[in-house]
Length: 305
Image 1: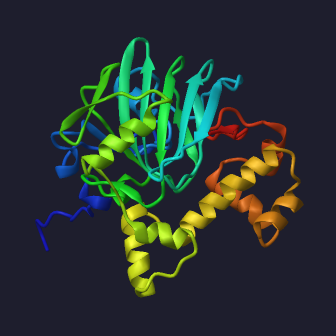
Image 2: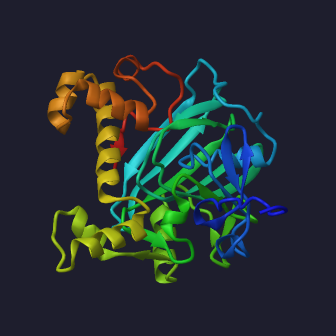
C-alpha cells in the first residue's frame, strides 16, 4: 500500500535498543528501569559489569584491544548461605579487555575506580564475548544461587545484560527504592539476609528441588516454565554451561581433553571443543597453556569457606 511505513519489529522484552561498538545497549525505559534503576544494558560481560565504564567515557568503545599481560586477579569463596553460591573479588591491572564466559547465575557487583563507586545487577550469560575492563578497578561480586531472583526484576529480563544502580557511593547503593550499605567480601551474606527479610530477593524452592534431582509432583511443562521464570534459562542450558565451566577448570589444572571428555560425558573431543568455543571463548590448547589473554573466570578456583 502506497504511503505505508514499514513496521519495525520490537526487540526482546519490548525494550528499544541502540547499537554500540558491535553490541546492543538497551535504553532505560519501562517499569524495570524507572525509579530504582539507572540504566539497562546488553553487554558481553555482565559478570564484571564492565559495560558501565563505557557509559562514563572511561574506556574506548572498541573490542579486542587487551594488554598482553593478564591482569585479572580473582579470589573466590563458597557461601554457607542457601541464597548465595559464591562471593568473589577481582582487581584489574594492565588489562583493558577480557573474554567473558557464559554463566547461569545473576548477581550484584560493586566496584571502585579512580575514587568513584559503581554498582550493578548482573544477569546470566548464554555465550562468550569480548568486553572492556576499567584498568585499576577493584570489584566485589555476589553470585546468587540458581532459583533465586529479584522481586522487582524478572531474571529472564537480565539474561545477557544487566542494570546499573543509581546514586552509588563508597558507603551505600540504591536497590528497589531503598538505600543499602555497600558490602565488602566478608559481609556479603549480611546484605543478602537483609534483602531476603525485606522480600527483595525471593527463591523458588521447586527449582532447588529439581537441581538436587528431585521430581516435583507437577507436570514437566510446569517445571520447565517455573525453571525458566526463575533462572531465565532452560534446564538443558544450565547443565551445558555448568559442565563447560568445569571443563575449562579441569583443562587449566592439567587434565587432557580425553580425560575431560570421559569425566564430563562429552560425546568426543570435537564436541568438547565446540562447547569451549561457544561458551568459554578458548581452545583446549589455550586453556592448558594459559594463553588467550584475560578471562572473566576464576580458572584457579581457589575456593575458601
